Image (cartoon, rainbow, N blue to C red):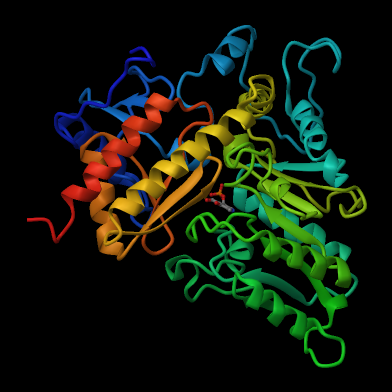
Length: 439
Ligand SMILES: Cc1ncc(COP(=O)(O)O)c(C=O)c1O
């Protein structure tokens, strides 16, 4: 398969081999996980956003594995570098409990390990003054540890602040901050003292009132953190107004409340900047990262992190050595190949194509939005969104839902114009095919 000429081609989806793999997976998988009805065959051809399933169908993947594969499949920017490593054992190290050498000296080693990843993360958060990183295994753990350092730092930690539409992960602590899908959170025990407000200027005004020393009922010195996704992800790819972000920032500064930016979906170039926060007048005190980074990371300042030994730890923090290498090389590739600039240009093109789809189909598409390559279109109902998603899949375009009735498109950061054109043509055809008013 060659990227410049590859085309999505679907014969039958799911085909007989895919059905067998799905049955095999479901045989022992917890039934409540929600799994996409598509099978990636990792032994078959895949390049850029194109991948192959076990029946030979070729799909154009605009999910990037929910932002976890920002460089697409078999990207030479990663593979060429990986192939130079003589990695004896892709060890799963006890990352936070043991020091690790990758040969030679730290400044002169062929292989970037977890310590290189942590140092690189402080380099790319220099604008926020960050100098300290805790690596973990997932986004939810990155969030949990962000909460822990904020609770630890606050003398009287009683409250936390979150926004409607938020999604921060599925561990019990992270769940307490979620205000998107009820299925994630319903009836599970929660952290106490979490206040939520609308994700709007009105919401920030409400927060101001709550935190007001005279008339409010939430003493700011008892608020351990405010957490938000600079661009809400699972909640619907909501891009906030600059004024909203400025106001949130001001409020936290005024009351000295640590501000956590959850960049697990929006970070590492997805929006055309390394962090979505970089687009705004917004100065987080903590950033959480994962997905594209391949490991979880809580990034902040040494003042905020506890220094008591054993206060934070994780056996497999930083995952295996290979994950740390991939995380470091992904950041390197983004910087070396100007992928931020590319994602900005490609994102503008994709957004104008989506706006055109909306303009020509106003009965079906009620909104088109995005920043960089974090884009979505919204339909008049969840049923219609689901129908379009399935019709697009049958035409060879993989997409994901988000929010209540939106469909997200998040291609690899090096997506080409040709790939954008194929995707938006397929999407437009899927919308027309599922139009209930069409004769
Ligand atoms: C913004 C955000 N925070 C946290 C998480 C949780 O990450 P993980 O699924 O790796 O635990 C996600 C995952 O989708 C996310 O999008």
